[in-house]
Image (cartoon, rainbow, N blue to C red; front, top):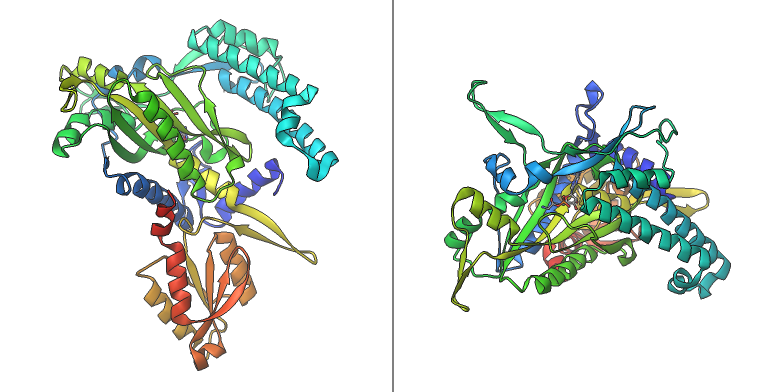
Length: 513
Ligand code: GAP
């Protein structure tokens, strides 16, 4: 494993060099916190989205998918609370004139204390070797316990002051923690103020008659306003879910950490409608199901943790984040929220239309409660990509860069390589490509020496390479090379291709869920 800072730099450069992610409008020096996905990035992103969609919509007979518009009637956002309450607390440093999210400054301070804990753990692990018990160390080491208590106190205070909208106390906390501006190094802060994150735009041809609209800051509201349309047309019975993926927009103040926090991003959300009173059970169920989904991709469980919210959003009666260990520390990857009947009741009130469900079992009409799972596709991309990118020491001074993506997510599943550009080998390789392309994403590559081609495919995350050589002319066998182990086996062409198709097809992975 590379060190965190180095690893993050490597993630950025690798993403660009190998056609995964580019800064938007690069030739004009870019647009901050907006990114484009390249030829390999868009394939990886599609594959993640598809895995999420299949596991939600195809595997669950009580979940259906929709695709609502980005533009919505402006009253939607009044009803949802976004016009009044979708704010971030901002603070400016008077010397550098830089603007920060006050809560993020405090979270960064917490991350520094967490880093100190990590350092103590690493030191102790080295000292005690195999007999090291991390859990016991965390619970008993005086210094670590003190750091952990400090973190809890800060989190609690921040949660309480944000909950009470006590912005003066948020500033007081920044001062007490002696947080300095990362640019000027000074503690010369302004008051903390609220700032609405929605992007406004206009609909209509003339200025006088134009209607003020917002670009949606979450996809969820497109599901809520369609609740009855879907329930009735699909004859859905509670409990049931509606899933959706799509773009969302937020005028984020802290625009850094690459695709972690973007101004235009994509969400994958599912609203699960339940009988009032059963929401706690469903909330726990969905927390577990979503963690299992992440683990099904083969990522080490130590990279995930739940963070139950102290401060609840205006619509929630319980909320938890699945946090992932990004190169810059544990951060939110997905939210699971028990949203009560807040959204449907609000839309009922603002639209004047009943949004109720008749429950045949209880013979009652009610506004359903909702448990939501909401994950950022771009954040999931970053989690998968940064976890997969590894620098491997091969001994004798050799190393390789390899992107160990789960096979079902890899942009290209197999590269077919003729050993040389002559003697009929390219033709055989091309025939294998032509046969395989109906089943999976396949690439033909004949440029450079075969060793360099293997390295390039490793860096792109391609799980298999099939090499055609002179022996293929005689006995119709090829070499199948495995990305992770670098092992090679000699197989008849049809066996090699079947093996690739099986290892990269979704169905076996979905069965693990
Ligand atoms: N409908 C609930 C909702 O939108 P959220 O916690 O604000 O909740 C859900 O967002 C997820 O969307 C987050 O866990 C994160 O993965 C992703 N997300 C939110 N803001 C983002 C941003 N600016 N850039 C990238 N992803 C973002």
